[in-house]
Amino acid sequence: MNSKIKVKICGLTTIEQMQFAAEAGANYMGFVFFAKSPRNLTLPQARDLLIEVPMGIAKVALTVNADDATLDEIVNTLPLDMLQLHGSETAERVAEIRARYGLPVMKAVGVADKDDLAAIDAYSEVADQLLIDAKPAKNAELPGGNGLAFDWRLIANRRWAKPWMLAGGLTPDNVAQAVMLTGATQVDVSSGVESAAGIKDKDMIARFVAAAVGE
Image (cartoon, rainbow, N blue to C red; front, side, top):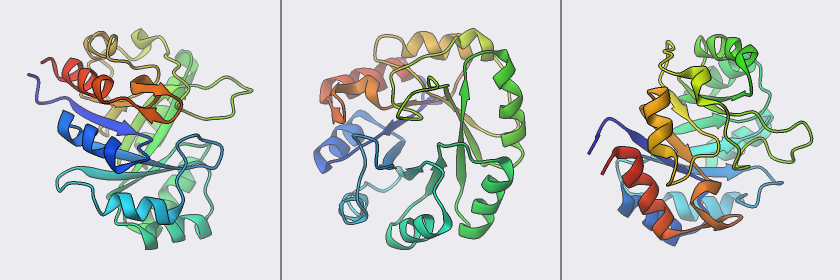
């Protein structure tokens, strides 16, 4: 078992799904606050879930181009460990959010080709962590959770100033290969462990974590 690999299960919507993730050995749990997502939560729903997250597992709120009023509500209502910014937030906005809330910030960066790599360097100067994801299609409704992968060779054994997490199209069947090709020490999955949009599958979560850590 490679204990250095950390796993984030994102888009959890029920206590049962959280139990699946915890039993499998997840290190992070992600909760979505984006109305267009099938994994979207209201604040009351999220509060009921987050108080049940086991100790030692990081609680992450995913937002997309959220304004201060929205973030104020989220941060003031929920016991969070990290904010994940999954929209087109600028580096300046990331720094502003980090300063305003005093929480670690993870910035998602979409990659489709080598021209997208420069943005990773820019965000690494202001974010606490980076989430390197597949860039969504131009007409996509969602900025993530689309089950798309990118060419992992683009970031093979690249290193940045901040910790980073690999996302985008990961499944129980390809995560081991993705880790091997990229050198990632953290991986994120949402749709890749679902039997239908927003419905997490216990066996798929267990298989994903086992494959990621090399069990």
